Length: 416
Ligand code: ADP
Ligand code: ASP
Ligand code: MG
Image (cartoon, rainbow, N blue to C red; front, side, top):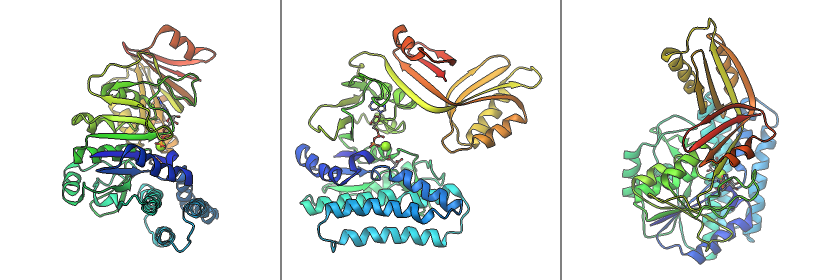
């Protein structure tokens, strides 16, 4: 078995969808499972729908209309015959979504989010599946929610491995080309759950683990894993091969090319992960496997923008000790803040966080009751793995450094 994952960028338009067909014809699709994300920026567009829904904005309908229009244009580009069943099926999904919006009574933002956001993947996989069928690549569309079971921690659900393994073992036909949704799962009550933004890579890894796949390939708009994000760094270099360990570190620090949870299941069964270009599918890309030394051995740069640096000190100059620290972490967990860097001294504690769920104000309010708080929003966090002095200088040049932390392999710099 091989598992292929196609992200939003690879299916952002009709040509992207057609390219999947030609890619499969080039590299082969025997015993293959294809995991597909929502098309282009659909997840962001649906996030706006959800926001408008909760804020009772009149723009709710126009936001929804944008999503429909975008998919309809792709459909019209792909299918000449407007009587093709795909049009009806896509409309069916939009009707389901409308019905949910009209009848939902739950005030739980995270729950509602997961019920709505998943239509991006449901619709994209339907379009890809039907398009491949039309081209002659016969395939089977499967609803991932019948295979991946999770808890009910909406928007960042945790996989129930036992149930998932069992469902995949009993329900999955390995001998045909299968297509399914990334990012989604379902809970014990069969409500849709999601695995966290950009979670489709993780979906591919979950299936690979449960199917004992030979390998996973994630197809990207870049040649592979580079030593820096080419959007922010000129001359980023392709890494030919890296170890699971290195990839986990890079993903953990924010190299957005791989979702951080992806590596762990693959590493457990030593399933190699390839990151390759969907524009040049026959190029070798990056191979990630066990005990591989980084090749080439170069500093690797990761940047996370829009981070928040929070510094706390006690109101009465007393020490920040275990008890305070555990309280601080409880609050960070409560408000779903992703912690990037921690630094503490006797009377102060600094933490750089990613305010993914917009809970910063609530967190600060809570912290201010106990601590003296300073907060810098909109800071950037740079991480360099295998740093050199030259690499550090390059990052620090022209910036105000607010926090810096060095370990043997890694330097992290928070700057404005
Ligand atoms: P997908 O279509 O699978 O969602 P993403 O857009 O999430 O793809 O990921 C691909 C992007 O990741 C690239 O276009 C690139 O800008 C960015 N990226 C960040 N860090 C790296 C890195 N170290 N190597 C390659 N690409 C990177
Ligand atoms: N569509 C989801 C997102 O944009 C999942 C993914 O693309 O991996 O976050
Ligand atoms: Mg993505």
